[in-house]
Image (tube, rainbow, N blue to C red; front, side, top):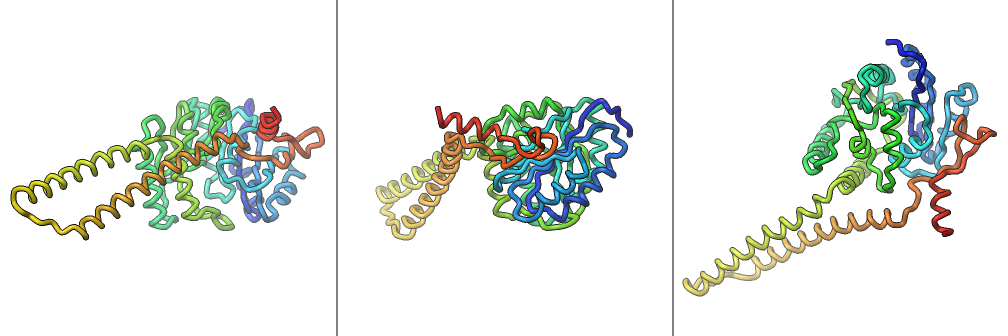
Length: 338
C-alpha cells in the first residue's frame, strides 16, 4: 500500500520504565511504515519513569527530528499520559500504541488504508488470539467487556479492543473537549468515536521488559470505567432494597399467621442473626458504591490538572527545543489566583 504524502501521521506512545523497549520499537516502527509516504510525528509521553527511559528517548531524538518527548512531572497513569499526548499531537490522524511491540506496527498500514479510503474516524485493533494471556485474565477481561456493554446504553466498547487504534483529527479535537479527571480512555474514545471499525490482529508476546499492570490496577481500572459511564450500580440497590423488603414482609406475614392461628413457635436467634448479617452486608456494599461515586465527584470538584508536564522536548518544545509550560497547570494556577 502506498499513500500520498499530503498528510501527517502522529504516533503517540505512552511509556513507563521501558528503557529496553525504545530502540527496538523505533526500528520496528520505521521498518513497518516504509510504505506510508507521509510525514511522521512520533510523540513519546514519559509517565514519570524511574529508569533511563527519558535518556534513551533523548538519544533517539538527537538523531531523529521526527521524535518528540512530553515528560510528565511524575507517574500519573496511562490514561493521563494518553491525555497529555493528545494535547500536543498535530497530525491529521494519530495512532496510539504501546512500546512493547505487542501492538504490531505493521497493522498501522491497515489502519491508514481504512482511514484514507473508507473515511473511518476511528480504527481500533481487535485481538484475535489471547492465548498468551492467563485463563484468569481472559475470563475477567471478557466478562468486563460484556458487563460494561450490558449496563451502559450509549457507550459500547468493542470486545478484545485495547488502546491500539488510529483516530482522526476530529476525534482528537473531541477528546480534548472532555474535562473529566477520572479518565477511562477506552470509554471516552468509544463515546466520541464517530464512525468506527475494527481490524483483527494477532497479539505477540512482549519484546522485552515486564508489564506494569497487575490485577489490582486492572480491577481499579474496571471500576473507574463502570463508575464513569453509568449510574447503574447506584440504581440497582433500589431494586435490591425492594426485593429484600418484599421477602421480609412475606416472612413477617408467615410468622404472624403461624403464631396467631396455628400456635407455631419460631426459634429466633439463628434466623435473626442471619438476617441482620445479610442486611448489614447489603448496606455496607451499597455504602461502598455510593462512596465510590462521591469520591470521584470530590476529585472532579477539586479541578486539579489531569497531569503536570515537567518539559516538552523536540518539535513541540519552545524555541530552544527544551521545555514548554503545561497549559493544564497554567489554567489551574490561574483559577486558584482568581
